[in-house]
Length: 463
Image 1 (cartoon, one colour):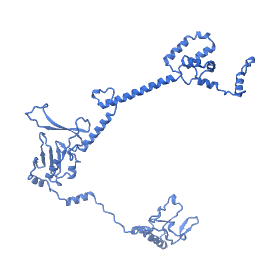
Image 2: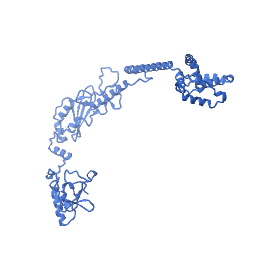
Image 3: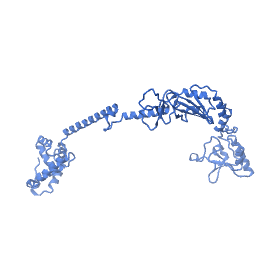
Image 4: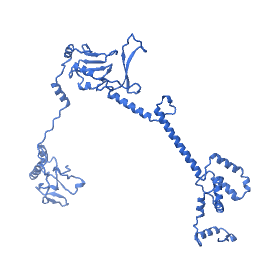
């Protein structure tokens, strides 16, 4: 089922955005009248859209449906059905809002795909090889004059060796097999398969002469590897045995040359430096060492084996911690001086409670207020701020502070008793805001106090 208008560039399709635009299917009846109408519609569409013979045949046989939107038909070419839907009049053809640029172009043939194997076969058929086969190579090698190179010819391969005293193993060893594929070994280390010498010449002497190959090998520099103090799982010790001069005394009964190399070391390098794979390990080691230099020293680490920079850094950290502790101590001392109450420790509090409990028998003869006072002191002792005082204690403190404010402050600052602050007393004192004349709040408070009293207890004096 077609879901969009068949004309190129027309955006109308069966979505909510174009719900008010009608789409008309191409007539599908197979009689002569409708076939002629369908052919006229397809001919108009073919002027703006590429349609081959097969596509036209499918449309004519009603095997494929095509839709046109109402934007391409004049209003007189459309009519309404009984249900209120738009439909085309017979023989109506699209005449308006047609594409401005014709799409009538010749069909472009599909580009032929050329596979890489076919390209290689073509190149191999036209390429000129330096050696036709292994027999041709053997004949031509025997006539070569290669300085410093030793040639060993056998039925299966040809080996080229070059020695570098005092090393016993050859510095360079090039082996060419029957398929003319060559393999390079440097001091007993196989050259990796991704080396440029293999890639450049496809690892075959068909593409390079023997003399040129050996010359290129000698021009490359030997990778010295990384230094010895690096310890990594990605490193391998490349040991090259050396010859011993019997006229010279050595500390060891053997002599070797060692190289710490990456597992993927290129061995031969164009630049006079380490290869890229060894360089990666060296950079990784440098990064780790730098991170360690900024990390603190473990308390049990011997100072004799610790980097001086790490010791200096640890000393700076210790100084910083000491300074922070001193600032905290000064802050605590200032708080103790400023705060009027001091929280005693649990042991001292228990001792005071024990003294009060031991004198509980003698406290039976004292007045009820004094007994209440000591019980409240025992209850709120050591709590610091946020204490809820008994109303009788508040009244006593208000009376004491009103008679002598300095005496109350001295008694409270001595920390002998836990008493409310002057601000707390002021809040209680000003619970009813004083005003001139008769204050209704004061009268209500007097009524509340006098209600439970009887007789002469209700008598009072206004001051």
